[in-house]
Each structure stands twice: as structure tokens, then as C-alpha cells.
Image (cartoon, rainbow, N blue to C red; front, top):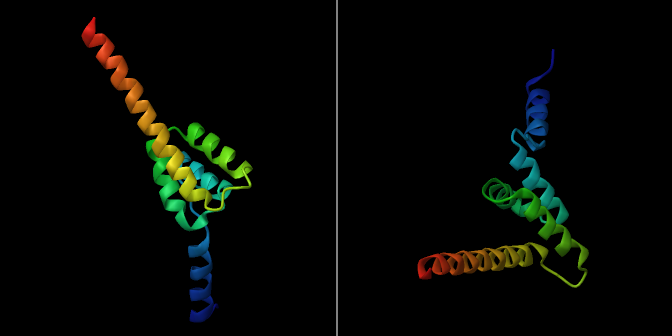
Length: 101
């Protein structure tokens, strides 16, 4: 019969393993691995839930290939913000065109 210490060690070992239940969780973890930013994996999971995972993965891979970037996670967030702002501007222009017609 296992002792109490063995049982606690086993629980601690299990707690360290990743439990992925949804596809967006896996996508977020993959993005964190691509960017070598495991510390912020919960942020990438949240982004994968809210945004298109393929687009996020594409941006992350482009950043990971560039060796001149020191802080890949921060640059990823900047790129995401820039792309989001560009999308908003395009949508506003489309809306203005519809109003003018």
C-alpha cells in the first residue's frame, strides 16, 4: 500500500502535466512554444479562443523565423495590435462608402 508521501508526490507530478480539453487550448500552447514564451501560455490560449488560430499561428511562425527579434512575445502582441487596427480602419472605410452611396 502506497504511503501518504508517495501519494502526494504522484499528485504533484500529475498537476504539472498539461490538460488540454479544447482545440483553442492546444492552439494557444503551440503558439507559446513557437514563440518560446511558455511563461505567458494562458495569454496565447485566450487569444486563440478569441481570434483565428491559423492567423495567430502564421504571425507567430513569421516572428519565430526572424532571428533579430529579442522579445518575440512582445513583438507578436504588437503585430496583432497593428493588424487589428488595420482591420478596423478597412471596415470603417467600407462603412463610409456605403453611407456615401
